[in-house]
Image 1 (tube, one colour):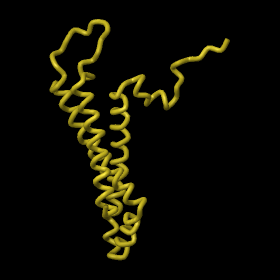
Image 2 (image 1 turned 45 degrees about the horizontal axis):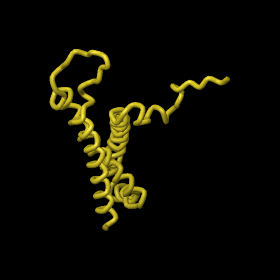
Image 3 (image 1 turned 90 degrees about the vertical axis):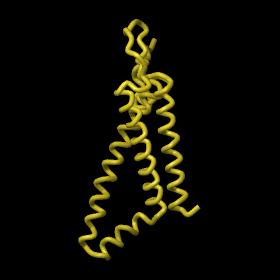
Image 4 (image 1 turned 60 degrees about the vertical axis):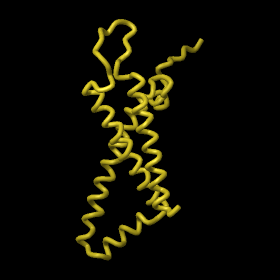
Length: 144
């Protein structure tokens, strides 16, 4: 008889919200959006430095952003920025004790106070606001 180890779910298990909850999804999205914004920041510095090549070098690079792919990429950057900001504010407030409640003795079964309904609403709000901002950005860039 083959024994199946339930802990070997791979990457899919790592991001499975039913197993770990929305907090794990928020953690993963926070890390990914941080890395994405870092990549955008480095690209933006490179793009801005092209002004030293004159108007031709600047214009050639800006043409890349005026494509469908460029617009979609910029909309994703908008969503990452909004999510990272709103979720970061939620985390900072939680670290400061806002919305967490009074500290309690960690008796079994221990449920961390930071994983309460208020913080889950904050996570869902961050996701919804990021989606709205991305859709607005797409509407502006595609002129709809």
